[in-house]
Image 1: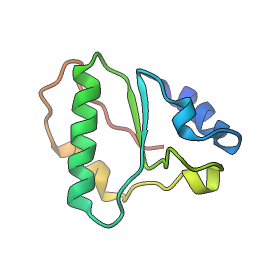
Image 2: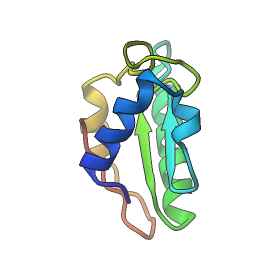
Image 3: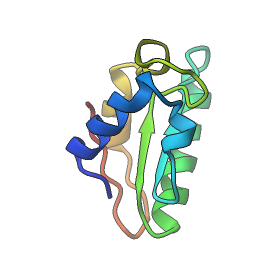
Image 4: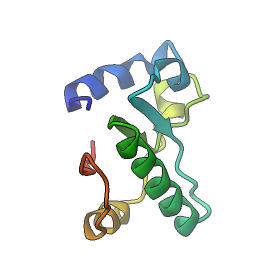
Amino acid sequence: MRTLQEITELLNELGRRIADELEDQDLDFKQWDTKSMDKSVKMLVRTAVCMANGGGGTVVFGVADKSLGRATALQGVPLEVMSICSKRRFMTKPILKFASI
Protein backbone atom coordinates (compact mmCIF):
# COMPACT_ATOMS: atom_id res chain seq x y z
CA MET A 1 0.00 0.00 0.00
CA ARG A 2 1.26 3.45 -0.90
CA THR A 3 1.92 6.04 1.76
CA LEU A 4 0.24 9.43 1.69
CA GLN A 5 3.59 10.99 0.83
CA GLU A 6 4.09 8.61 -2.12
CA ILE A 7 0.61 9.39 -3.44
CA THR A 8 1.19 13.13 -3.07
CA GLU A 9 4.45 12.84 -5.01
CA LEU A 10 2.69 10.92 -7.79
CA LEU A 11 -0.11 13.48 -7.95
CA ASN A 12 2.54 16.18 -8.40
CA GLU A 13 3.60 14.33 -11.58
CA LEU A 14 0.20 15.08 -13.18
CA GLY A 15 1.58 18.27 -14.65
CA ARG A 16 3.85 16.23 -16.91
CA ARG A 17 2.13 12.86 -17.26
CA ILE A 18 -1.42 11.52 -17.31
CA ALA A 19 -2.50 9.45 -14.31
CA ASP A 20 -2.89 6.34 -16.47
CA GLU A 21 0.89 6.36 -17.02
CA LEU A 22 1.48 6.41 -13.25
CA GLU A 23 -0.68 3.36 -12.52
CA ASP A 24 0.71 -0.09 -11.90
CA GLN A 25 -0.43 -3.40 -10.44
CA ASP A 26 -0.94 -1.98 -6.93
CA LEU A 27 -2.01 1.57 -7.84
CA ASP A 28 -5.15 2.66 -9.67
CA PHE A 29 -6.70 6.07 -10.31
CA LYS A 30 -10.47 6.34 -10.80
CA GLN A 31 -12.58 9.25 -11.96
CA TRP A 32 -15.67 10.02 -9.88
CA ASP A 33 -19.01 10.09 -11.74
CA THR A 34 -20.59 13.34 -10.56
CA LYS A 35 -23.92 12.50 -12.21
CA SER A 36 -24.75 9.44 -10.10
CA MET A 37 -23.70 9.01 -6.47
CA ASP A 38 -25.17 5.49 -6.40
CA LYS A 39 -23.24 4.41 -9.51
CA SER A 40 -20.03 5.94 -8.20
CA VAL A 41 -20.29 4.33 -4.75
CA LYS A 42 -20.89 0.94 -6.40
CA MET A 43 -17.80 1.51 -8.57
CA LEU A 44 -15.81 2.49 -5.47
CA VAL A 45 -16.84 -0.66 -3.61
CA ARG A 46 -16.24 -2.95 -6.60
CA THR A 47 -12.81 -1.44 -7.32
CA ALA A 48 -11.68 -1.43 -3.69
CA VAL A 49 -12.79 -5.02 -3.08
CA CYS A 50 -11.09 -6.20 -6.29
CA MET A 51 -7.86 -4.46 -5.29
CA ALA A 52 -7.98 -5.93 -1.78
CA ASN A 53 -8.78 -9.43 -3.01
CA GLY A 54 -5.99 -9.14 -5.58
CA GLY A 55 -3.39 -8.77 -2.85
CA GLY A 56 -3.85 -5.17 -1.85
CA GLY A 57 -2.82 -1.83 -3.17
CA THR A 58 -4.02 1.74 -3.41
CA VAL A 59 -6.94 3.21 -5.32
CA VAL A 60 -7.13 7.00 -5.60
CA PHE A 61 -10.65 8.15 -6.44
CA GLY A 62 -11.41 11.51 -7.97
CA VAL A 63 -8.58 11.53 -10.50
CA ALA A 64 -9.27 11.57 -14.24
CA ASP A 65 -6.71 9.09 -15.53
CA LYS A 66 -6.65 10.41 -19.13
CA SER A 67 -6.30 14.16 -18.39
CA LEU A 68 -3.00 16.01 -18.54
CA GLY A 69 -2.45 18.74 -15.97
CA ARG A 70 -2.99 18.63 -12.25
CA ALA A 71 -5.86 21.14 -12.29
CA THR A 72 -7.75 19.10 -14.89
CA ALA A 73 -6.95 15.63 -13.55
CA LEU A 74 -7.71 16.25 -9.85
CA GLN A 75 -11.49 16.30 -9.72
CA GLY A 76 -12.13 15.07 -6.20
CA VAL A 77 -15.09 13.26 -4.67
CA PRO A 78 -18.05 14.54 -2.63
CA LEU A 79 -17.37 14.92 1.10
CA GLU A 80 -20.14 12.49 2.08
CA VAL A 81 -18.28 9.63 0.39
CA MET A 82 -15.90 9.21 3.33
CA SER A 83 -18.81 8.80 5.74
CA ILE A 84 -20.45 6.27 3.40
CA CYS A 85 -17.24 4.25 3.20
CA SER A 86 -16.49 4.35 6.90
CA LYS A 87 -19.94 2.93 7.72
CA ARG A 88 -19.60 -0.08 5.42
CA ARG A 89 -17.94 -3.33 6.40
CA PHE A 90 -16.08 -5.16 3.66
CA MET A 91 -15.13 -8.82 3.92
CA THR A 92 -11.70 -8.52 2.36
CA LYS A 93 -8.19 -9.54 3.21
CA PRO A 94 -6.33 -7.26 3.58
CA ILE A 95 -8.79 -4.96 5.34
CA LEU A 96 -9.82 -1.89 3.38
CA LYS A 97 -8.71 1.50 4.68
CA PHE A 98 -10.16 4.77 3.45
CA ALA A 99 -8.40 8.12 3.69
CA SER A 100 -8.86 11.52 2.17
CA ILE A 101 -6.11 13.80 0.92
